[in-house]
Length: 177
Image (cartoon, rainbow, N blue to C red; front, side, top):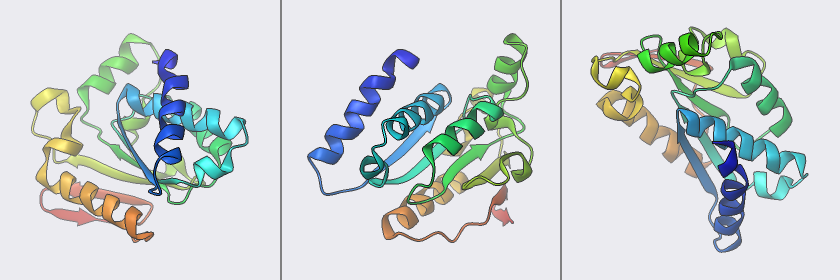
């Protein structure tokens, strides 16, 4: 995954260079770690102008150590919008990743917003939407309720707004804040 970091940075640069649009980054699982590492690399080069063109970042079931994520976010600094993290306590794939690497839980399995307290991050917990398919690792884009929230995040990022609290739990057709 880390071999792709330079290429992702270059891709973001090229998209921004050839467009007046801002970039919205959506990443899943290990791609979330790749995305955060690319943003970190951009920050370390001091290219705030490029980071300012990032309209939003959504990480779905991120396979990242929470302590590493904290360091990444602190290095990246303030973005145009908070980073949204879709998590699930029922994500078996992330549970297996934690077990096989003999490490603590992954960011995609955190159980509260407290674990990212102090960061410009919003957590969307989709645990209540699990259906048992695909090891519950893709719920954020297989559940109609979660897709609706994701669509709303993209729309808000494009509009420059931010109506979401620090922690949202989706259960069935309800949103609990």
